[in-house]
Length: 375
Ligand code: KG4
Ligand code: ZN
Image 1 (cartoon, rainbow, N blue to C red):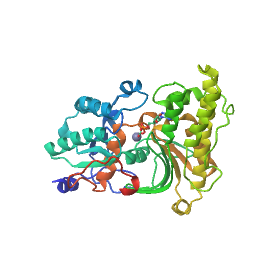
Image 2 (tube, protein in one colour):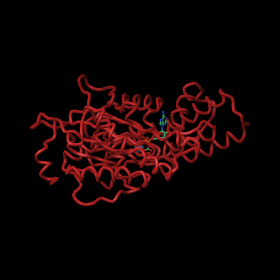
Image 3 (cartoon, rainbow, N blue to C red):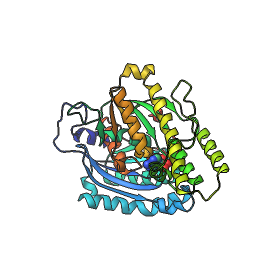
Image 4 (cartoon, helix red, strand yellow):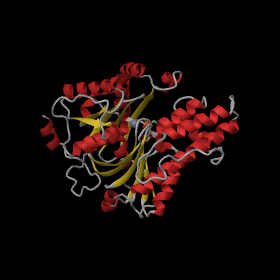
């Protein structure tokens, strides 16, 4: 049935398409449940987000200082039906209006992934609709093609086209990727220990600023002196594009052992500003090296892109935009609500995969680990 459906439902216009054969946009229902957000969205192939519901579990995990997988899985079970129902209602659609269903099938906390994936599978089977198994990281990686603000672009250019150089920084991952196309990712560099998001979260925890750490550290950093503490810039004196954040974390602990709590507001602001400056320097240094990587030079990407939850960071966005300008590249970043986990990025990645015929043809086992290079 899926193959037939695929032929009948021709995709509307997407980047690179010159032959639009159907005027009716394709509607995709996307479902995300891999961490602490239960989210669903309906996105069409003309890049409209018809509805988008994000139910954040953050308040439920805050008292534990991080996501508790078992609690997250239970919270997804309680929320998923209502989130999908509201998403359809808000768009003024019924499930019969949906052309394709997509859900995160990994990587992530497996209990949560299972909840969203099984809900999507049940819906697709009971309604005879095509189903796409979306890699969560591919959701982050492709969402700038749905919506992004673009800097340094040529006049009239407002979309992100392949190939592009991507800084993917989230709570679970920190990678530099050459994105050649849907499902075509080349790993240029990655963290050897913590992800960038984890580093933000851990620093916030040390300072007693709560969870998640990124937003609050970002805010406090804007009020502080980035030169107050001399954090290390791990690996920046070495060639290559890999990251390491554990040395920054150890330095943070050492600084804090020398100071005594409770810390003043000024101390916290300076500490956050100095920590963030170190992370920014590492990102710029590694991206600069990535631009000299032979694979990147020969692919000649026109756009430098940031995605993932950490892409919300104001200093990281600003410094990457500056780097892109120096290298005569465009810079693209998704809007804030599409950086952290959300259903719209899964719906969009679902549409992009559907367009290439990448639909589920036999049962799929969700994966806690699923590198982008294994697509
Ligand atoms: O992509 P995401 O929602 O979840 C994963 O797939 O992991 O990313 C969440 C991460 C958290 O570590 C959070 O602290 C970080 O994104 N984050 C930020 C900011 N907002 C969220 N990090 C730095 N600055 C921010 N403004
Ligand atoms: Zn994510």
